Length: 108
Image (cartoon, rainbow, N blue to C red; front, side, top):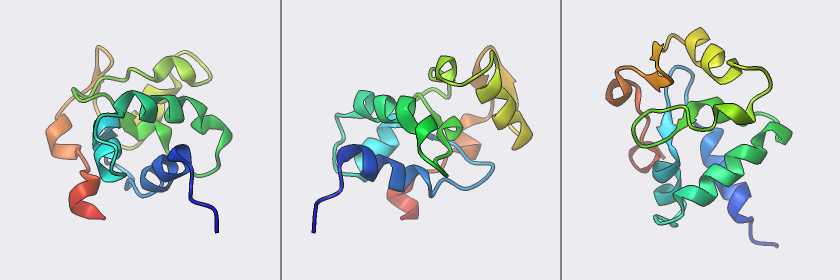
């Protein structure tokens, strides 16, 4: 059986992020055993629009900033999706980031 690709492993973790929670590129990288590959997780999220059931809008940078928002259709789609889940966004940053942070290392 073929080993899952890096992107597939990223998507498998991202699919587990619960509604109303967010995580970071680095947290996903650590969870798949590639702690120094946060940027590659970002590249995977850029491509996630082509993958069904990957909530890429829930993956942010380590400070809760919506750094990937320009990869979503529409001007503010990423922010709108997060706000629909109850998040407060000010200046492209999720407020109370630590309270809504989902750590895959602790959860899976």
